[in-house]
Length: 112
Image (cartoon, rainbow, N blue to C red; front, side):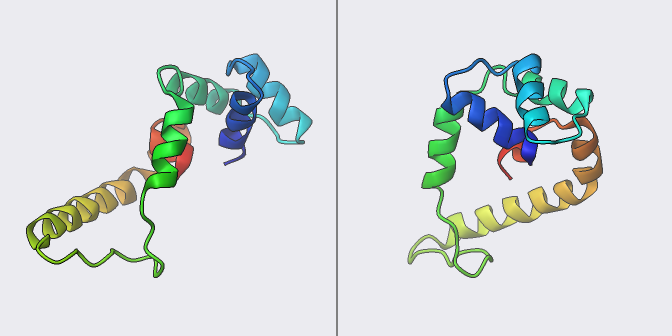
């Protein structure tokens, strides 16, 4: 997570998010830097508008209980589809967590 925080710090300060700058921030924070994770994060963020991603994440509703939110009245079909998609994504995440952590790829790793 500290890699993501370092990228957010660089973005907030207007600095370019590149391997050298990211490594400098991490080292200044006392993190034992893994070059492969730095490269993966820089590559993953290459075409990402961080400001937009942060705004989208902030605007997303978060259920207080941590579970799935109850669908609004009349939205039963949409709620069922969303639940199925979330369950499928959760199943895929369980299988791919170790691979994602090792490679550092995916936006889920950046903000999740």
